Image (tube, rainbow, N blue to C red):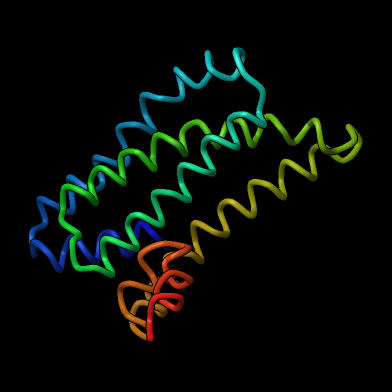
Amino acid sequence: MQNVTQGWLVLQLTNSPLWLGLLGLSFAVPMIILPFVEAWWSTASTESVSFYVTQTGQMLLAFILAALTWLGWINVAYILAASFIGSALLAFDNPARQALVPDLVPSEHLFNAIALNAATYNGAALLGPAIAGVLLGLLGLVPCSSSTASAISQFLSP
């Protein structure tokens, strides 16, 4: 959902396909390069450390983007930076999450757990943008700009 609203916001700010392409590039580059670094990182740390770092970082990015959007201080550079950093965090989060499944599930249910994990990830990738489009039309940009933005806007609105 956040990717859809970031694209919508970039389009509203710039009305430029070039900036939309750069937004996509800012997300793609870390996802292509950083899994190689993550392989080293995962041997040097535990999955729980990776989760704390990545999930906290993603939460802080969501709060920052929502606050900047709500205050009207958002610009394309902030969105590109947040996209790049969020993608870098995701590049570390995904392999750690997948490596955790065998530790949580008995071996006789491992294949089902892996399939369920993949289904939920792909389901979110399929349904998230559709839900974002509906919410964007109904609620506007700020509540949809991040997963935590609606909480911020509800807290700050009179």
